[in-house]
Amino acid sequence: MAEAGKAVTLRGELSGLFKSALSTAFPAAEEAPIIASCNNPQFGDYQCNNAMGLFGKLKGKEGAPKNPREVATAIVSSLPDNSTIDNTSLAGPGFINCKVSSAYLAGRINALMTQGVASLAPPLRYKRVVVDFSSPNVAKEMHVGHLRSTIIGDTIANTLEFCGADVVRLNHIGDWGTQFGMLIEHMAELRPGGLAESRDEDVADLQTLYRAAKKRFDDEEEFKVRAREAVTRLQSGDEECIAAWQRICDASRREFQAIYSRLGVTLQERGESFYNPMLKDVVEELREKGVAEVSEGATCVFVEGCEVPLIVQKSDGGYGYASTDMAAIKQRVQQEKADWVIYVTDIGQAPHFDMVFAAARKAGWLPEKGSAQPPRVSHVGFGLVLGEDGKKFKTRSGDVVRLVELLDEAKQRCRDSVAARREESGDPIDEAELEAAACAMGYGAVKYADLKNSRLTNYKFSFDAMLELKGNTAVYLLYAHARIAGIVRKAGKDVDALVAGGEAFKLEHPRERELAMAIVQFPEALEDMLEELTPNRLTDYLYTLSETFSNFYTECKVLGGEAEDSRLILVEATARVMRQCFKLLGITPLYRI
Image (cartoon, rainbow, N blue to C red; front, side, top):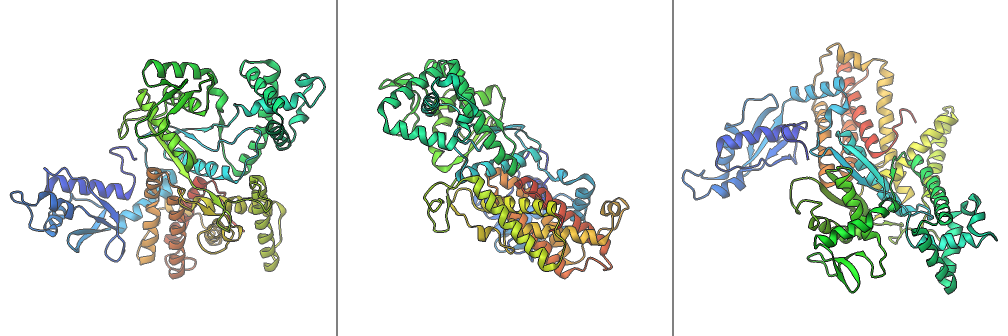
């Protein structure tokens, strides 16, 4: 994922050193280094695991090593002089353990403090990335099912931006299609003068409008015919229909934006309607290239290994979402000049996107599958949100849980909890501070509870679990950060001034070194997250960092100790990395609770 020649991660630096050693010791093997963290820090920090595989490749050749340990010894002997590795040791049949020098770790912490957390961001091979996420449907309220796409997509986009990519955050809303026919026709029949008399209040309650129109569409055959005629008028550009459609879209847009503002999510709307003018030309191009063919009256792209084709134009001449997705991928690659396009939707849509990507490759818009050349495409699928009973998350009445209600409850619970703790401690309650804490903790808890799970699995939504003060929760981590900020505040010292003044930063206690190592490994968590597009890599790192700090603080006296200044630098470095993690996850850090 990182650019060639730019090793920002410690793992990357070690990989470079062992690559040099491998090419020196065994030049004919062309072996790529295999570097991993040691399971037991007692033996080292990292491990090179090439010896056994390389021994198997060389076995039987003239002058081949007698055993894997001999291979490992030759690799170690060929390591170039460096200031990164303090010492190496061999374990088992040929594992090479290496301990990183404390001076190297201290240097990286110093660089973080002087150059900022951004200096730790691993560079990307991809410069312009389109991330397609959230994508609710117009005239329908956002529900808990939209939560995962919105916050997973936002975290991926945040991390890409932090690593230097130019990210286009697209909201592919469902703002076109047959459902608008029934909505427009129902609006027309609400007033004696039809659409000409339509007002904003007609779309004040979109849910009521949608349910009423849907019921008539299902129950009244004549209404269904009129609704289909309304679709035709809309698609033909009828001014009254377009005005009604725009009114519906505007009302939905306001509701969506209210949710995005609360979640702190930024998106550029580019709905299905944006691609309408492109559909005819896209289908014609697919036909001319022999990628699409007519089957049973429909224009289809047949993809190897798929039982059903991708229908890019229906037999009645209409277009569906497959047509729109084909137009979208072409536009994003050719006009947006994206060298990576990421789609964040539920896992059930994976087969559809596999077909879209395959069709785009057949059309020559994308390189062959497996190619390292851009543009790259990725589908980021995710599982369902379940209730505590293990079934699909719904209200007691069986309705889908509205996202706005879910956020309201999370915020209120956190508000009550913080207020109760303040009353118990006798601290005065500032309303503005309480509101800020309730929002940060409530919305942060909802986000973190989702992001910490593997996106590919279903997860159980539980307010009680996500608002726990202990364990891997946003609430625990926000309290942990507030405590760390409190340590620096209580010291009353300018930590940046300590660093600038050349304060001797030492890593003498094992817990100091352990914490420094955890801080320095932040870029590796980012690399792993972007390689797999799995936000839980970042949440796992954040929780581990917090636990590592807790162990450090328990055993290493900071305030009033002989090493106070040196340890304050370590404390502040931890806080800054934690804050960057929160920012990437879309969570607002708190400095006091």
